[in-house]
Image (cartoon, rainbow, N blue to C red; front, side, top):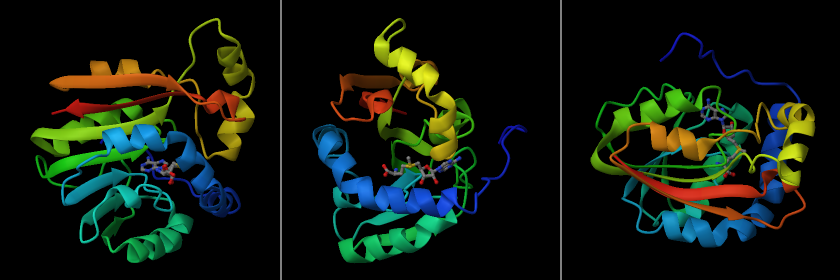
Length: 215
Ligand SMILES: C[S@@+](CC[C@H](N)C(=O)[O-])C[C@H]1O[C@@H](n2cnc3c(N)ncnc32)[C@H](O)[C@@H]1O
């Protein structure tokens, strides 16, 4: 773990707000991104490591009887995540850790997933280093994330204008990250990325990528 990664700072109001927001808005977000998740989260291994599981949006992509090692430092999410895992018949190994430093053994994971998390972690490059460390050779990191819009576009201007209130509301989330660039530079053996655009009212969040990085 790099020195600049500090512990997750839980805000008294925004922590519970985000847990409630993602519980309420989860079905709507899911409906928008389902096609991309169905593609990249198809045929997941029986044990999956998930970064920032939130309240369990991705449990539906695991087969009942699977194990989810959930790296989730936001404690107000834990109760809903536990309940959702129980409903789905998924064994939950919930860890109050950061994605930058999961504490998992090197080469121990067949599959790591994330959705809408690399936008929020403190150090996405360090997270990708950690993902490569914990994946066994041939293992995969599958992701669905929102990213910076093309330079000069109206969406890019809006992302810039709204960056502070957006980050404040969504616990440090940035709409200005070039995550495709970071993924390609992270040293994976092969990276497949599909960019796409949602048509939701959350305009700054509509530029997205989904894909698979092979260790
Ligand atoms: C926008 S939510 C997405 C939750 C879920 N993946 C989904 O798709 O609904 C971002 C999640 O990342 C978690 N998170 C933030 N910083 C993190 C970090 N450094 N390591 C792991 N998870 C983190 C938050 O607690 C939150 O659950």
